[in-house]
View 1 (cartoon, rainbow, N blue to C red):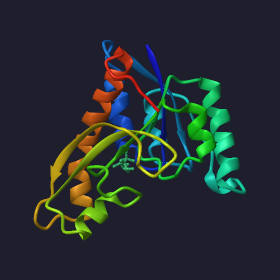
View 2 (cartoon, rainbow, N blue to C red):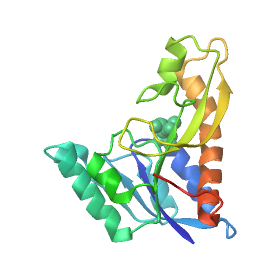
View 3 (cartoon, protein in one colour):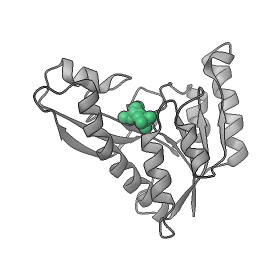
Length: 193
Ligand code: GRF
């Protein structure tokens, strides 16, 4: 059974989808802990499912490196097979990535390498693109630059706002993420640095 730690910063709707999938007895992975870099709303989903959680508040540390070291210590407690960044709005320091690579994956609301970074949905709209997408990638020490594990196009509709478009992307992200976790757990998908 693959053990998974999920890191979030926000509402955690993608986390909730993964929690719901992992509740099924035939799902080959289980979420053992949820972590956040702030008092994220999405931590409530962990509580709903009886999953332990922790917060390592970014602002409590003098710099990214110190924050990453504490985050790494918290994760080592659970020694998960896989770490999923699902709405973590922080770049991990390279020291943390190398500590767990390649077993860290991330979901991104764009068709990478298009529109990387913290505002992928907004950037696609601003670029006047007719379509964007969702991607699941291996985390490397770049920004959304790791190997792509799964991705799918999402059409941008006339009149879309950042919110309506993101709401259309998220269900695709969730489906891709759940499938990627399943394939990693069954060995169908091998993570390479
Ligand atoms: C997701 O689209 C994720 O890819 C992006 O932020 C969003 C988080 O949404 N980084 P939620 O917190 O899972 O609802």
